[in-house]
Amino acid sequence: MNIHIATEQDQTEIHRLTANSGVFSQEEVDCVDELWGDYRRDGPERSGYYFIVARGDGAVAGYACYGPRPLTEGVYDLYWLAVDAQFRGQGIGLALIRQVEQDVAAQGGRLIVVETSGTPTYAAARGIYAKAGYLLEATLKDFYHAGDDLVIFTKHM
Amino acid sequence: MNIHIATEQDQTEIHRLTANSGVFSQEEVDCVDELWGDYRRDGPERSGYYFIVARGDGAVAGYACYGPRPLTEGVYDLYWLAVDAQFRGQGIGLALIRQVEQDVAAQGGRLIVVETSGTPTYAAARGIYAKAGYLLEATLKDFYHAGDDLVIFTKHM
Image (cartoon, rainbow over all chains, first blue to last red; front, side, top):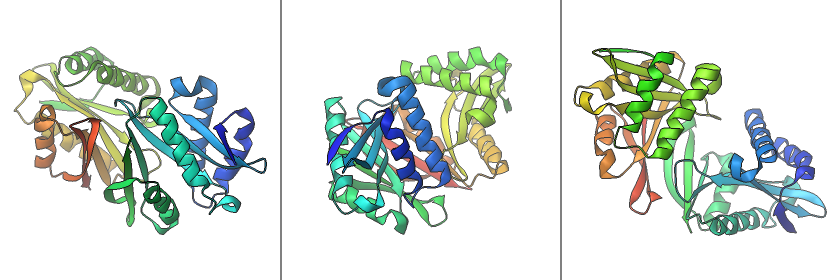
């Protein structure tokens, strides 16, 4: 498995992986497409969105999107993390998180924030963040919907 | 005192008030200008930013900026709230919050989120949110800087 900065030829597979994840809504798929568009058009520094991909057997197995949070110094959001169903359970999510952390540290970041959902659908995702050493720092009850909390993980570098 | 939707003639005073608030950094002043530009160019629905102003004695005494949070249903962020120094202590901040709540309710919103700072500079702001019935739902330690926490207030409508 190989993790690298996402380039134009990754676009189709990133889109397909997001759409087929079984986790994201159409609005969320559209959001990833929009951030990808900004990333490709303006570049990561100007857009504020960085994409990295993990490739296994030549296919995109997963990707992450992160970037600096506006109006902060050294705070980075891990906006998106997705692993293709057929590649799950192989540590690819964790490997992507580690690469994000390396990149953020290299850019002088000191804090990574992950906002995710408290529903059972996201239990595996929350497990990966906990395993990666992220602290469940806040829960905002009934945020996305009644019964669907916003869960905020953080990690100080 | 009169609260109304912000129009083009409020721009200069909103900028001046933000720049002279004694609270906001240059980057934050620039951010307000940018949101204002989006609001005026694309309108509130397309930009996602709504500005309202409070006028007293003909001058802009304060303003608020709010809007729906992307990828949620019915969650609104109160992005900015500022009251001119010479108009403080008259309940204008609270009146602006009440107007935001009315507007959000009219748009079908069910939750308002306020992200602010935990420093002494923002003590008055935090006091107004507490007085307005907002719940201090989360504190992210050392967020903006070491010793400067992110404080999240919420109010369910």
